[in-house]
Image (tube, rainbow, N blue to C red; front, side):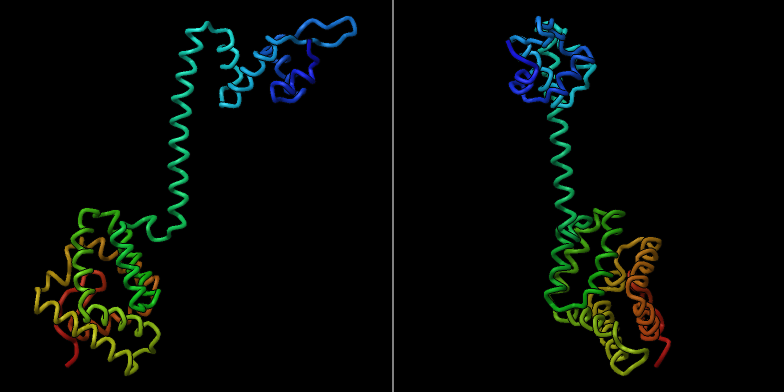
Length: 258
């Protein structure tokens, strides 16, 4: 015969837990001996281990009580159901872990892998991080709004980046962000950008430069860009003078200067 302390030790619980199970009726309380102490047999150990296992698996105490009173067939069916619930919970936890891991991955949390690779290529070229941030913030809503367009658009960007003019375009943007209004360097950088856009339009057409982007979405992306890099707004004004308006959706206009 076992004392309550020995019973608790064998089952891997505390004495307080055993007393709680007695109070809730989960574990029958044995008859006390002549000295007034509870004495437990092997069946009590088995029963307590069953209770501990079920509660550790997350089974509510009320449900544990039902299972303990069930026959063998009902108990086996209940365990199968519990196993399926635990499998679903494990899958959910694994998905949560993957989501947390993606948080550490930065851009890949909200962007397709091909866009992340493109941004990394810009970093490798030495493009200013503010320009990359503007680029990234533009791709995020675009990927959410028009995911089917991403492969075509990013493939075009990659092909263009293989040529010097687009790399020069991003580097010119990088320089322009820190230049004072209408400085010679800024105007030179804008001239480079405008010349590149004109070259693309002459070679591939103006639709190629503008891209197939919804005007309302383009307006949103422009706002994001200007909020992230305020100098970009001045760049669009200077580009308009050189025959190109907009930021996300570039369109050819009549130059406002000679």
